[in-house]
Image (cartoon, rainbow, N blue to C red; front, side, top):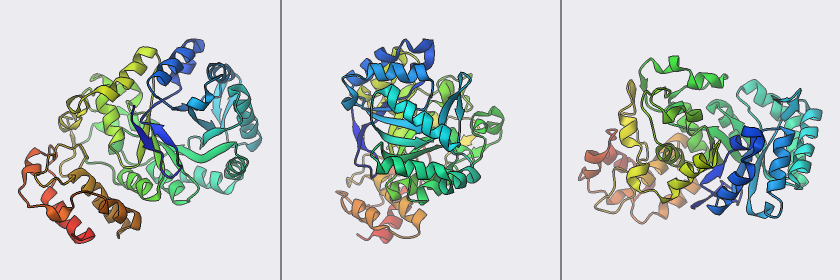
Length: 382
């Protein structure tokens, strides 16, 4: 298992993490088996948004004696009413539900307290200015949560939260179809097939800016919906009309700037094992570039997808890394000190490019790499 820094939190998390879908199915009968399988593979990060009391109790029982082996990303503002999940901003309900969470999980803290499902700017302002954020900060001060997070499907809202400086972890929906869609308050529009009938060109600018903002601010992204609820794995369900593999979806998400881990949704042990197999696959099995280039009515022409097809460079330049730092600097309008420091650590710089063009002949998306290297040399110096 590979591990990554979760932004500026100081936590080091497994790049494949465990979503909570399987804790709910079949009355939670798979909970212990899923946890056993995950821990055996080195998974150390779990997301839990469901407020179902039985689900929380079963997970708490499964964690007895091994709570120290996992970090919990647990959600605030999810409550259980009349036998079903409800998102709430009622602070008394939020408090009661979180107290119940700790009790049933048999723990006195969670590593990340995730403010749940904020998809509109008005809701974000309500959270920020109201009692929910105040409560989250109280919990952090008391040591009941280690870090404050927020979940969202809307890149504009997520960026506002990141810019506030209060959010250290962002749970965001990341996959090569959703990344094409503009910001909106209705997350169901992300998987509405009608929105894929028109030609789509390149990644949505707000989404790209969000990833780069998180990288610059040190906010770690944990990924949800990497498989689009399973739709991307089937050609007849995928909005792109082309099936991707589990490994391709995972690699795409893990290649985005600031992404630390993917919450792999798994209803069964077999599904979880498919995601865990990513750790032992080769580059060819992970490669998503050819599949993305084949999407009908969708084009990433001229847009670097950080897929790595440009390698190897005869000068040893890590072209994808240089391009990421270049995009971060362009998005900021200058060169942040952290970006300059990371660029300085590269073994070979853009100024070493000899403009041979070998990288451009291999790029599936027609990126003008030589020009990017010239721009990076100007921006960062030799």
